Image (cartoon, rainbow, N blue to C red; front, side, top):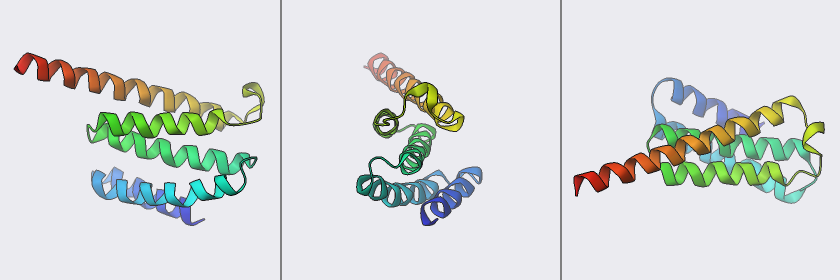
Length: 124
C-alpha cells in the first residue's frame, strides 16, 4: 500500500510538472517494492509492482533528459519482468502492456542519448 501511495504522489507531481519532486517519491516506491520482490521472487504481483515503479522512475528520468539514468531504470524494470516464471503468453494483459511501455521508454532514452551525443559533437 505504501509503495502505491508513493507512486500516486509522484504521479501527482508529474502532472503538475514538478518532475524532480516526482522522482523522489518514485525512487522511494522502488525502495519499498524491491525488497518485497527480493523476499519472495515467485510473487508475480510483487514483480509487477517493482517493475512498474522502476518504469515510472525511468519515464521521469526521460522527461528530465537524464537519458543514461532513464535507460538504467527501464532496463532494470525489463529485467524484473523477464525474471517471471510465467510464460509471456500467460501473463496478465497489464503485465504485457507494462513490458511494451518499458521497451518504448528504453527506445526514447536511447534516442535522447544519441541526440545528446550528436549535439555535443556538432558543438565541438
